[in-house]
Image: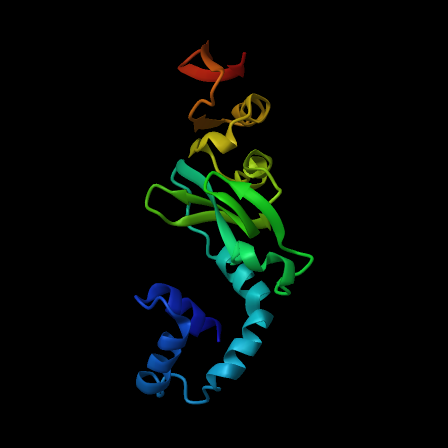
Length: 191
């Protein structure tokens, strides 16, 4: 089942049901004991943890240049939040730059080749900057991120570990420069 899910994400299919039909028709020799689509969908939630472990085990080697960002995972349309039962108690109501939504946030760190280095699924109310130290564990050199990942305290703490966080400036922030003996390092402070 995990192989089929991984194949789906590597394929050009956008809808899992269409991909499953393709597997039933064209890959019957590779999967001779294939269960029905309805049963497969019912059992999918049971291999979320093994798939998560698999992805963490096969992380790529770190090149020294990384990028971090987050995206929203919407559970339902905003009109249906009050009657939604999927992920009840786990999903939260939150806001992004595009507006309010009900669901989760996926935080992702990739390298300069687009390979996944770290990821984390959190409730919506967890700020991006709070995930920076967790996501940057084991990553070194330079990490580029959006304005949501800016924090002078966390950046200084990571800098002492040989790690440089590079983000855009928020409104009402000024840039200062610090010389560390070899390079000029840009730091930010709020007014």
